[in-house]
Image (cartoon, rainbow over all chains, first blue to last red; front, side, top):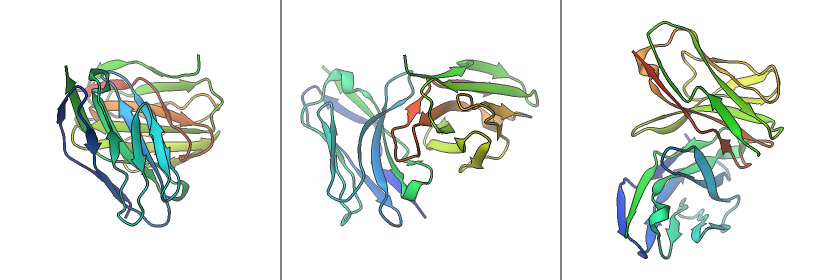
Length: 111
Length: 113
């Protein structure tokens, strides 16, 4: 079936460190892939997305590339800030059906 | 302001007492969904609606009902809540389908005693 696997958290970094949060997926066909972010006490917000293989989604300094050969969509940022502290969810949408979310990865950035 | 609103934001209730969580969006979106978020499980979809009077089950529909009588509203109904429905609930909407950006409400924290 369709599923998303994210790296276990929490991820704890110092400000300006490099961030990678791994995400791999299992799906039939060519799903769209997403990263959503949840700041404390809020609902989720779309961070970036990619709809086909080799697409790169980017927003607010975050990037992720849709790698079909490795079924991955890893989230990266070159220099994290304290304000990036949040829970990050990888998600996929296989052929227009409902979104399937990973379990989330908590990022904590200290100054 | 474009937004998804949910009410109430917090609710403590007892087993078996029917309750409704309201969800409303002002963006004229076609799709609306309900999710529950539980520690270690992430978000799981309960029900979704593709348009007025069109609803379908998500991954965890047992114990829940929904209705979509108007485009802007998508209430979640728990006819006989049980403690295992204690969770954080989110409503979301999108323009056309799930490949579009999902706009989430602020969440409703429900405790069933």
